[in-house]
Length: 229
Image (cartoon, rainbow, N blue to C red; front, side, top):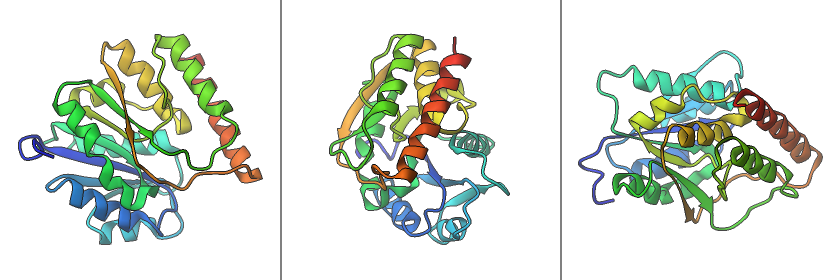
């Protein structure tokens, strides 16, 4: 990444019960972004995720109980912003990317090159998932509330300048985080860009657990739709 030496970067990693992969995710990001400060937002994991992340070299923000992705990532972002020397750029990502987290450089490069203000990763290959109802509903909410038509409305892999992060905080609660972030950024006049990247993660499939997960997502997207009316 050619300009990574001139722009400071913080990486905020969302994690819940990712002890089996968080070390690889952190190591991959550290290798891809030398000098970046890595933060892990541990949403009340009970499998030792926080300890593994700290051992891997990340700063960890952890509260005593789960607060949902949006709430915990907000707390992590606020902790990062309290640093006397906050970064120029911020990259958000999920803790289950493992080694593929190192492929996220194009997002940061797009923001550095002023191609967009909020760069979002589209997975080059679809892994798991259901029938697309949750994805489609999130896209509909975004379209209705700000006119944007993203292809990856719920992707957690996002890069932005610090001013954009400040504009979209606090994040919408729970799984509504990315949907709300996109609406808030576009309404504030920031440009959205999407980039296809070869990524891998722990996808939920067509199982009872997977359908319950997507039902919760739908509820959170509906809350974003209502709160941004």
